[in-house]
Length: 332
Ligand code: NAD
Ligand code: UDP
Ligand code: UDP
Image (cartoon, rainbow, N blue to C red; front, side, top):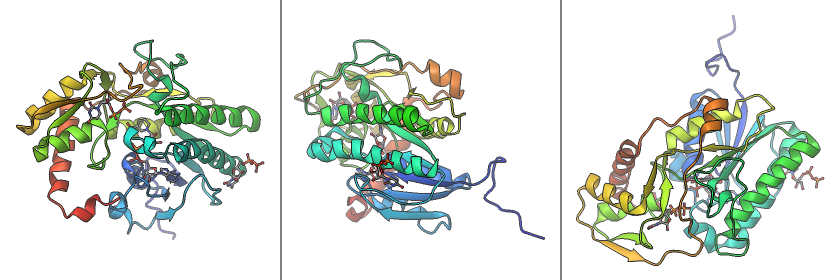
């Protein structure tokens, strides 16, 4: 008698899944969740902002493989599904090498779409709320076309991700590639790098180490923060929808906070005595951002469950542990 395949869970058969950017913050959580659902996972990453330590706990898993590779180059592997997450996501990093950022968004998407076309595989694009730019429609619905500066320092990311969406829809219309496009709003949680540069990790690390809390501008600009577990649940749910559901679909937590409110909350929760200092607002920094998640609710039966205080506590605990770990844990 043959042994039951223990990888079969929830009645679904195991798939071979490629995760680009799998050693990054979101990618490492996605790899972990897909493995726990019984799938085979190939993590492809150039390690530009990702870290081996993010996936170290998965290395011995019998269904996990890794490949160091830059997605701007062609990739020939055999898989059933592709999650395309490869791209630096923090403004500090994507602005540092803007041409590489555009290449990653555009050439990386072409290669992943070419791969999906050859394999007749499903492919999901990790798009972003940045496609709305500095939005004049608030909250942002998927039908809003955005307000994006094409020539500013953020454009490599915003326009790169917009071009990636265009490519996804053109491969879908022209070559029948099955696509899913998720527009991710600011997501935070454990495994963000301490030097990632995004606001949640900056404020927590600054508070825990007694450094000044750096508020850019007057701190009245808003963001809506989603905890990583909620986001990953929504992303996998979108991938598993019927073929006619392509998106784009907003996934994020609609509770909106100013950066002043975030700083106050982090100071309270950490009990830190860090001072608040003001720094210049980066060029083209969006004034407000909040997702309308009606479509995700209706089509994915998805809503976030983890509120900011709870998610921040988990993230504070993570950084507390990390900051007492050996410095090589932080190495990129
Ligand atoms: P991250 O920087 O932690 O992860 C990105 C990963 O992609 C890293 O491991 C990096 O090494 C890898 N990478 C970058 N360029 C690559 C290339 N050319 N080839 C191969 N690997 C490459 O960022 P994250 O927050 O985990 O973001 C993951 C994805 O989700 C990105 O595409 C980002 O644009 C998107 N996203 C994230 C957020 C968020 O709030 N976290 C919001 C919107 C969209
Ligand atoms: N590609 C890839 N892996 C594959 C198939 C294609 O990386 O398995 C890349 C290849 O570099 C190609 C790109 O995807 O340039 C786009 O593929 P497509 O078939 O659309 O274009 P073409 O090969 O006709 O240029
Ligand atoms: N920000 C800040 N202090 C920091 C880092 C960021 O006040 O140390 C602000 C930033 O100007 C922006 C908001 O926090 O208004 C969110 O920035 P982040 O880089 O996290 O994400 P994004 O701008 O891409 O939404």
